[in-house]
Image (cartoon, rainbow, N blue to C red):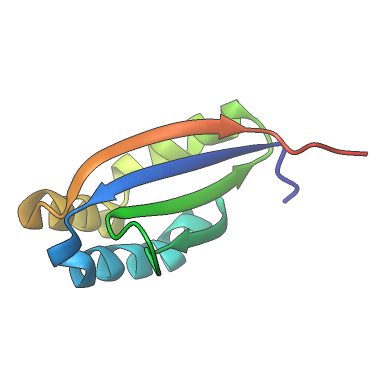
Length: 104
């Protein structure tokens, strides 16, 4: 898949629950590609700010993203991972920004 748009998800996480967020992110590593997204990566805080994490997922168009979101809502593993985040409350805030690559 060639991505024309990238969804950048910015998470504010509880720094005392980093392990929970990492578990959550690792689960998406297999789920996202199965549902039709091109996962560019999940990124954990390393140095500096300890409560910001990012995910970047590529799509060929916004319509592909809408199809992907529909699949997530139907998938048992996706639902379980969303529920895990709700129960453990390690995500304090989540925002999405849509980006496109600067091309030559």
